[in-house]
Structure formats: C-alpha cells, structure tokens
Amino acid sequence: MPALGADMTAGRLIAWLKHPGEAVKRGDIIAEVDTDKGVIEVEVFTSGVLEKTLVEPGTKVPVGTPLAVIREAAGAPAPVPTPVTVPSPEGRARVSPAARRLAVELEVDLATVRGTGPEGAVTLEDVRQAVGKTEAPADRGERMRQAIAAAVTRSKREIPHYYIGHTIDLGPVTAWLAEQNRDRPVARRLAHSALLVRAVALTLRDFPELNARWVEGRVAPIADINVGLAISLRDGGLVAPALHHADRQSVDELMASTLDLVERARAGALRSSELSDPTITVTILGDRGVDTVYGVIYPPQVAIVGFGKIVEGPWVVDGRVVARSLVRATLAADHRVSDGHRGALFLAGVADRLREPDRL
Amino acid sequence: MTRDELRQAVLGVLKEIAPEADLSRLAPDAPIRDQLDVDSIDFMRLLIGVNEKLHVDVPEADYPRVASLNGLLDYLGARLAGRSAER
Image (tube, rainbow over all chains, first blue to last red; front, side):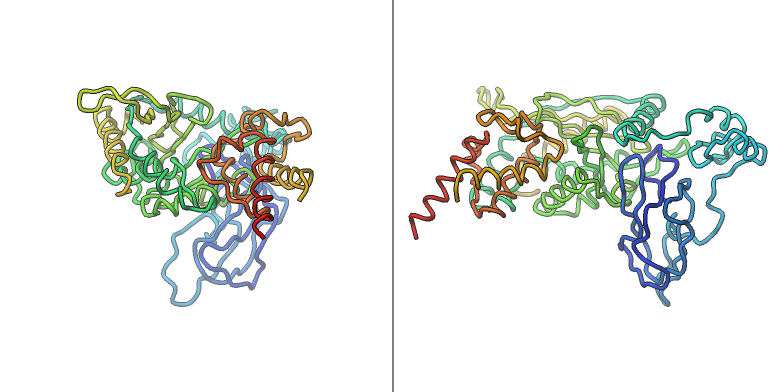
C-alpha cells in the first residue's frame, strides 16, 4: 500500500485491474485503492509478471503492506523497491504483542493506528489513544478534511516557516501569451499558470535545498523536480498532485499536463505516483482575487510557492510610472533547511526567468 | 441549431465540469465563473468542450462576450448562423 501523503496510514483495496499471470510494465495501473484523497490508481514501478496478489478487494491495510508479488522480467534492471512490489511479508505495521491483544479486546482496527514507538511501532498507549477514533467518517469530504487537518497541523507544529514575497512584472509574459494564443485553437492555448510553473521548476535547479524533503531530522534533496500543483476540489478540500519532471516539460507540455491533472483531480482519478512524488508545491490563488498567498508547507516537503492575482498596477520603468501586469509571488519555506537570503534569491530567479518568456 | 439545443449542449459541458451544480438556478445574464466557482482552467475546459461539441472556437479576445450563459449562447448562435449563411 503506497503512502500517498504525509499522514496517510492505511488504504482499502477496491479492485485489482491486473490478474495473476498477466504481464505488467512500469507505469501500468494495477489496482485501485480508496484513500482519504479519493480513489487512487496504483501504478507499478517495475516490469514483469504479476505472480500473485496478497490483499483481497475490500480489505483495509496499513501503508507499506505488500499488495502483490511481481516476478521481474528476465534480464530487467533491478527494480527500485516500492511498497507495491516488495515481495516480503515484513511490511505489516510493527505492533507489540500486548498492543495487538488490547486492540482485539477494544475492537480497534490496527490499520488505522499511527504508531509512535520505535520505528513506528504501535504501542499500548497508541491503541488506548485510538479507541473511539478509528472509525473513519463515511463522508468522503469529511475524511478529506481530516487528512488535510492532519497534514497542516503537523506542518505548523513541526515546520518553522518563514515567508517572503516578491512582486513580479508579468508584462512580458502577458504580451507573449497574447501573441501565442492569438492563432491557437482553444485546446492548445496557454495560461499564465504553465509559465509560472515552468519558471519555478527551472529556477529550482539552482536551489536544491528548496526541492527536498525533511526526513528524520535531515534534509534530503531530490533529484527530480516534481511540482505539486494545488487544485481545489469542487466539493471542498484540495489535492496537490505532481507535474512530474516539470523542469523537463515544455510550456506546451506543462499546459497539457495541467489540464489533464485538473480534470482527473476533480473527477477523482489520480494516480498513486502523482500523490506520492511532489517535491515542492505551487499554489495559484489569483482566480478569486487574492493578492498574496501565505502557504502552508506540505510535509515532508520544505517549500511552497504561491502566486496571487495578476493585476494591472503601477510600475516604475526607467524613472517613469507605467501600468504593467503584476503578480505577487511568495515563498513559504522551512527555516531548518534554507534561509531567507536563499529564498529571496530563488524568488528573484523566478522573476528573472519570467522577464524572458521566450526562453522558458 | 435552435437556441434551446445550444443551451442543452452548453449545459451538458458545464455539467461535466461542475457536476454538483444546480444548473437550473444559473442566472443567464450573470458571469458563469462567479456563479459556479469556475476557475480559469475550468473556463478553458468549458470552451474546449464547446469547441468539441459545436466546432466553434472562441478566440481569447472574445472571452468577455461569453462570460454569461446568454452571452455565450448569443455568441455561439451568431457564429453558427454566420457559418450557415456562408454555405
């Protein structure tokens, strides 16, 4: 069962989409699981043959539980171990025998208990704490609210945020987009968001400390730049699935990926890697008139970039005040990992890139 | 295509984008985006859906004219009528 968010502890297998004996290849959707973030398609990260499934549909299992065994194709490179393909039976949550007995006694579903003991082991106290709290609310909206609550509470409790902002002249970008979109059919038109994400992703190459995770007291930079795009859901709540390798996608590709991601996020059809892989979040809240975004970092990420409304405002060019398209870009970052000086250089880098949209 | 057929086609696209919305309560002369909490990406999806169904591509410069349901229906009606007149 893949971990699809900082505070996901368990998921319920809904259905197998591949069956024992079938060949699977990297990226195939193998199963669907029900989580607090909706129904998620689980991908495989290796190629081979699905040897057997280990979890029956309808079963709720803790994160890390092996779901299936995949026999690798002969000669294939060694797989990256993932929760989906690990064939070992060792993936169950560690639970002390006393805690397990108490859980049975109190009818506590261990799959929903977050362990606080050594290596995440579930202790007697964890089981006692969980009494009466293990029944997930039937209403998905409420479950999602709880998942968000858990993530942001952890964020604000553990992450010392610092906040900085930078007003960016989007005049060149706005003019470039108008020119580009004039002759494009609607399905191929570009939006500001694609350029903003592209500028952030390219700038992150020079700021690996912002494209990282904070794990067990240390920062771990991530080689891939997977921008989580915050998408509000129509019935409340939000998700921030990954635009994978955003720095390697062209503006056109990022636009197509964004449209696809928004459509699937709102239809409840995201893939597991899209929820587990973001290395930073970008949130664009200008549509509803917001000037400035003060973001909450999604742990274990260490930064979130916000953009407000693009407005016509006064801007000084060569000593004269002129009207320009302006946007307020903000960075909320983990002060354990980076300092305001580096954050300021990062935002200045984003602004520089947006001055030359032709080069994005 | 009658105006009612156009309306049904547009509401069909809107229903895919905002499945929870009660479209019978949509005020025809007020902006769609404000009433249905449609963001810029969803507004783009609306126009992409309209283009797929009706083969009318609304250029960016005309977006202000199609902000409301009536505005969009007027616009589509005029564009489709112009197309038939050309035949």
